[in-house]
Length: 290
Image (cartoon, rainbow, N blue to C red; front, side, top):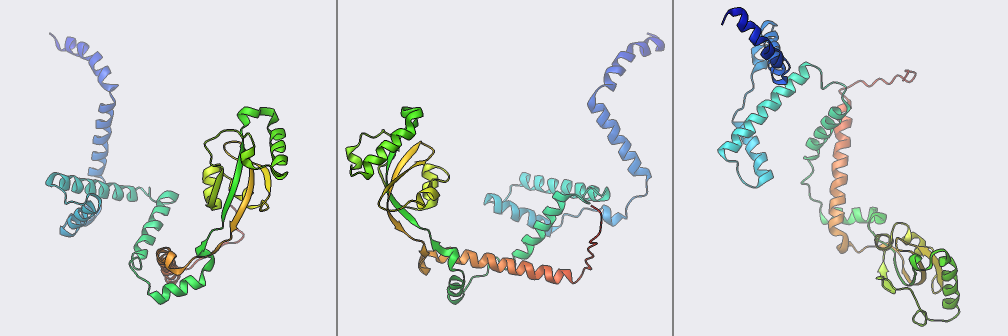
C-alpha cells in the first residue's frame, strides 16, 4: 500500500479520534505541562510538599478519631495521596486567586479559626459555685414549662362534613348543660379522652402546630371549642394548669454546665476578636455607593 493510500485510509480514524473527550483532556494536560515548563517557576522551596512524621501522625490521628482503629498500610497510603492532592489543589487555587472574594470559602475559614480558638476553653469545667451563680442569674433559661390536663371530645370532619360546626355547637351545649362526656355518642378515634400534664410543646407534637397555644388560652372547668387539630375538631375542658416554675438546681445541672461552657466559649471568642482588631484599621465609608 502506498503512503497516499495509508494517509487516505487513516483520515476517518483521525476524525473519530479528534472527537474523543479523552484525547482533548490529554492534549490540554500536555499543553498546561508545557506552559508550566517554559514559564518561570516559583522558588523551589514553594514547590515542595513535605509529608513529615508530624503530618503522618496527624493523618493517622484523624483516622483513629473517625474509625476507632489505626489505618492499614494501604489506607495510610491513601491518606497521604489525598493530602498531597489537596495540598496541590489548594496551592494552585491560591495561585489563581480562586480563594479570593468567595463567600463560602470566607465563611469556612472564619468557622475554622473560631473552632481553633474555642478549643482553648472547650474542656473547662465550672465549679459548683459557678454553676449555682449561673443558675441564679439566668432563671428564665431553666424554667419547667407550664403543663395542662384536659378532657376532649373529638368531632370527626369526615363524618359530619359541612355540618361539623353545627354538630360541635350541639355537643358543646349539652356538655355545658350538664351532660357528661360518657353520656354522649361521640365520634370514634385513636385519641385518648383524657390527657394529663402536657406542655405546649407536647400538645403541638401530638395534635399539630398551634393546638397547645389555643388550649392554653381556654378558661378552666368549662367545655370550650371547637379547637382545630391535625385530626379534626375538639371540644375541650381544661381541668388543671400547672404554671411554669424555675427548675430545681439538681434537675438541670447538666444543661447548666453545657450553657456555662457555651457562654465561656463565646466570651473567649469575643475577647479574641477584640485583641485581633488591634492589628487592623477598620475604615467604613458611610457614603459609599452599593
